[in-house]
Amino acid sequence: MKFEKTNHHYVPQYWQRGFRGQNGRLYGKFRDGIKVVSPRTIMQRDWLYTVFDDQWNPSDMLEDALSVIEAKDAGLLQRLHNPGYTSTKGDRDHLCAMLALQATRHPDILGNGVRRSRELGMLLADAHALTLEEFKSQMASFGVDAADAHDCYVVLLGCTKQQLATELAELIALSPQSAQLPEQNALLAFPLVERAIHEMELRLLDAPPSEAYVLGDTPIPQSDLSRGFSVPLSRSLAVLAVPASTPQAVLDRCAASAAEVAAINRTQTDNALEVVVGPSAALLASF
Image (cartoon, rainbow, N blue to C red; front, side, top):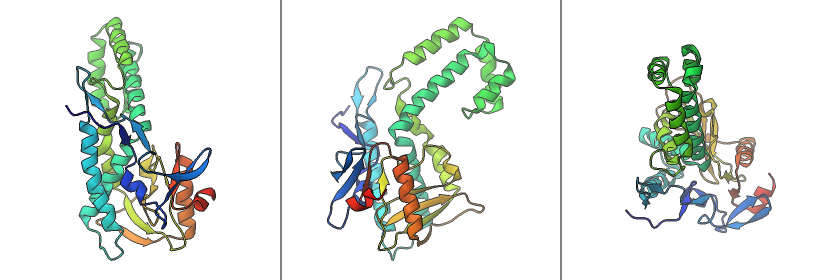
């Protein structure tokens, strides 16, 4: 298997480049100040998407697959930035997929997948101490319906407490990179997130000539997406997703107000983990 790539970007470089200023520079705001940055060296983690087989052989397979997707996503944003372009249903579907992937590939989400797996394991191991109704109620928080929870409960009660405790210990001992339960499994939630976004109303917001968007390293909120969210796509374009009462066929588009741009930028700044990027130091300093 090929294993050559080290720096894995959880916010793609093409996306970051869209926030460069007219001078071609990209500025980043960190806790210790503002400086010129390169998309090559920020919003990335070493070996984040490296996957391993049962023999602990590493592979670039996932990172390579993401690179192919990113090339297509870059083409979508290029089309949407053309003022004369009329978006299609396919563009809307593509944008939903792009946003869903971004929501599930963040390192915080990958780490959360490992944590939730262990929490589920602890619940399963504790089945003997719970009534059926208590078990079904707690399983619902993991997205398991009542019928499946019932069947799972019956199987678990057929095991001894010691058997369940032993399996839980093995689960907790697994490395986040283990092929048995890799942290990249969080990406399997992609179809569910894509479906939730698809059911929303998506509106492209063009920034006024005097305004610009910024991008944080946590572009999309990590919970409650169905309540609505905003995501800058470049310094001049953002997308707003809101709950919809009727199905939407194609993307809406309108001019954003200065207040809307400021609110979206504030959200990016508040949600950022380490860095926010934008076209000028002055803009970043205003937040």
